[in-house]
Amino acid sequence: MSTHFHCDDTETLVAYLYDDIDPVMRDAVARHLTGCARCRDEVAALGGVRQVLSEWTPPSPALRFTVVPESAVSNVIRPPASAWQTVPRWAQAIAAMLALAVGASVANVQVRHDAGGWTVSTGWMTPAPGATAAAAPGAEAAWRPALASLEESLRREFAARPALVAPVPEATAAAPAAASDSAETLARVRALIDASEKRQQQELALRLTQFVRDVELQRRADLVKINQGLGQLEGRTGAEVERQREAINYLIRAGLRPQQ
Amino acid sequence: MLGLDIVEPSAAAERTRREGATFTVQALTITDEELVARSMDGDVESFNQLIKRWERPIYALAYRTLGREEDARDVCQETFLRAYRAINGFKGQAKFSSWLYRIALNLCRDWMRKQRRQPVVQMPEDVDITELASEQGPVESIETLVARKELGRAVAIAMAALPEEQRTAIVLKEYHGLTFQEIADMQGCPLSTVKTRLYQGLSVVRRQLEQGGMSVADIRGDAS
Image 1 (tube, each protein chain N blue to C red):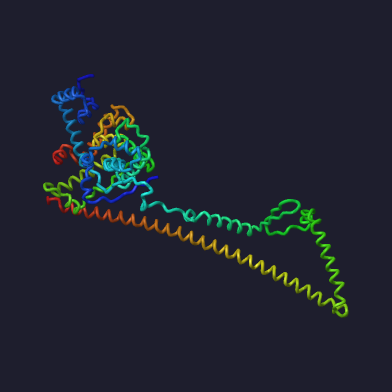
Image 2 (cartoon, chains in turn red, yellow; image 1 turned 60 degrees about the vertical axis):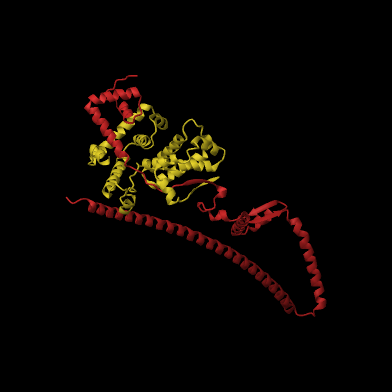
């Protein structure tokens, strides 16, 4: 190792400045400084910079970070869980089923099982008669005996009717039968209308519920936005106060300076 | 799972902890290495003892690197959180404090990369006449304190203008007393590079101060 110091050896100069240097080399630098004014000034200036650096003190905030087991933490603020996460699992399952049912009713999903297997259809368009007939050739065997028995019972009923009712002209005898048929049709239509109304009411209730939920979610989102906006406003106000405080401090300092 | 909680210290306790050096007075009977070993065994209180010892130096390091109080606080908290999570990976090849410094410096570097900006000069050193009155010692006048605060701010501005490597080298050497070798290990560069960075950094700070109308020779006289 060289024990001679040169003026341009800044690394050794820094080591000397911080007294993090081999003792032999330190003596060599000290000897050099006694005879070299330029290096002496450099060391003095850098020493001055070091002294100035010591004036830069960080603030002293209250820190006291503490690691705590989660089991012992009751007051740690955590980001809020989403509304969906707070709902119990069973309620989530019911909600999912309801959503599925609503979707199915809106899409008019129809599931049928017949001799041809499972049939799933959607949409509100009624299938073409030809398509229906073609779609259920195997079902014919099932309903034909039922139709035959219905026809047989109707025949027996009509055969028994003349014995109970006095013979009347043909036109007047047909009138009550027609009236009876129309009343039955009317009743069926009413029943269908009632069922349809009930279904529509259910759908309306479901949609209303959905709408209310959407409005609630939107309201919460708006509240969060408003909160953020207020926070930003508060930050700007704080900055303004900071500037004013700085100006006041400047005035105080100016007032403290001795008069020329 | 663990959480980090921040508790306000009492004023008296805070006074004793005001300067980073005071931590060395406390609990010297147990070394960092012993506390680390206990922490590895799951003793949370031992780790909290380590935090107590090192939170202020780490905060000071982050503050001087980033220049902003809130960011320094966040980096400090994150440093201890990461250290706790990785405590079992600490091999003890370096000092615990060096390991902590390294984590903190990496976090500072990440922060600056994310923010894509240089450290800022915040105004916490702002002169508040009431604060100064409470800080005023028996021999120091208000004028001296004001001058000192101004000097601190000038240094903060000059340091913020330095390249990251030079600033870090100066902070680690000047304020944390690390050896050249420790800084070289931390910065991953040769010993000579650390010395060069220090020399260049100090020279730049000197020029900056002189450009701001301060003569280093005068400052020496004023400050001493």
